[in-house]
Length: 148
Image (cartoon, rainbow, N blue to C red; front, side, top):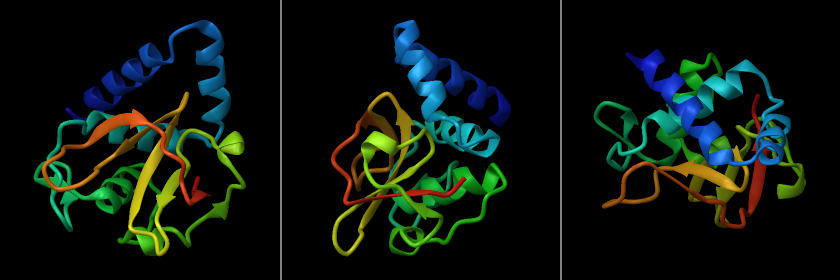
């Protein structure tokens, strides 16, 4: 069933891209590889999953870092548990102009929130109590990391 959700999420991402030029830009932004494509597709497929502080299970609930960790773990990439720890993983990306699909977007000093960049100015996040996993426009991150 999970593979079907990931495929549906990939189709959704393509539809969100709109015109051919925007789709091409999302492909370029997604140059991170198969793990990145799988992780982003899984994260999008979990839209509607309730926010649960400390949550790491898509079937029960996720917090922001649990969403990131679970999506990447199922794509074969191990990441630390908390957003603050995840902010030290991978390589730094200088700005949103260099961001690619699958890059991690961090918020706050110290870091207190993380989301996954989808390309096309969109991100997937588990925002806070009372809101579910969702896809939204990117807000200006305080740092960006490439983990795949």
